[in-house]
Length: 332
Image (cartoon, rainbow, N blue to C red):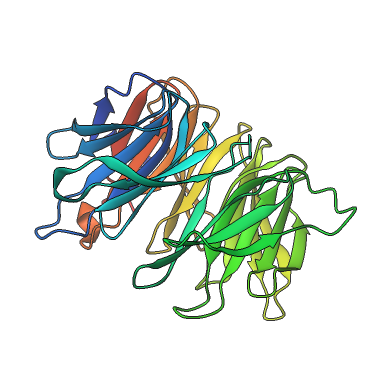
């Protein structure tokens, strides 16, 4: 009798080449047009943002607004008519992309020299919050957009010794509810901040090393974080707003650059220093697949938000200058 074997991991659906530099950030936009036509934004170490047409697998447009300094966060607002990009030139640019335009219409200066990506949260029609590293290395600043007015500056207590914020995730328990921020720090802590009070509500020591990436599922009140260690930490938020370690998952190789939970909250993906993308079931952290394609560190992973599940994709960007595109729905 032949033993049944697990399905081999899939190959990429296709590969995007042409960034000519390590890829540091990815963001899909699917839903602004009918019929839905997914496009992918990438930000690279050469300072360019590229807009990829996923039908032709080619770059439709290249945006050059960061003076050749690495772009490490991009996010669309107002459908795909406007884009925010954050670069190592200590600047966040707002791009007007409507009707074929590609111009910077506004920008925000930052004094931070770290690699902490911004986080964006839609609060109302035409009103967003953006969290970013502040001028003081251990602080986080939250602004309202498009007005750029300051909402709060989140300062750790004296003697907290958190180090710099490394990753940020704005969220709210329900639309219109009071917003919160999850922040991962250099000392390995994850902290829950209340923005309306500007106050730290809970601090959890998740890692021995700096928290490189985190994501949070506000429906299940559960989050996940990765660091340079061989462990993924899963933590939860109780009704008293205390963070608690839920479980830890040991990895074969150390180093997680990015972690993201798919919008349907069924699976999550990690970007590994070991050149691999790993897929887990979000409910129990069951390992589902190891996607082995890249030849250098994977820096970022992003799921598309297409309304048809079968059309949804996973993109991964690597130091090897390539973006791999995967379809996981037949597997998961």
